[in-house]
Image 1: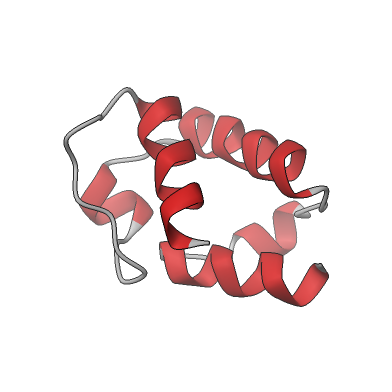
Image 2: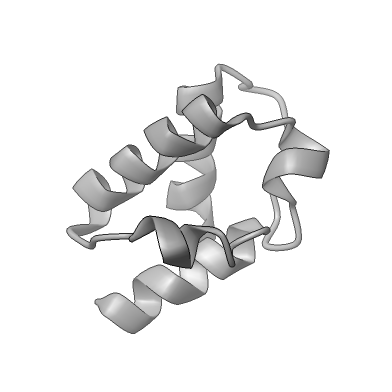
Length: 74
């Protein structure tokens, strides 16, 4: 699942050569702003058929946090 999530992140952020792990932090490591984060959430929701409410999103700082949330909702 990490590879698919990482591919979505790279595509949405136009950062093809960035290394993404479960420990990668959105704001600190990827420099994601609120608009980028919104677009990422929409892409994750579309790909995995889940809904990520904004109050849940506030608790997701790393790629691993998003993966765990998606797995719990699937």
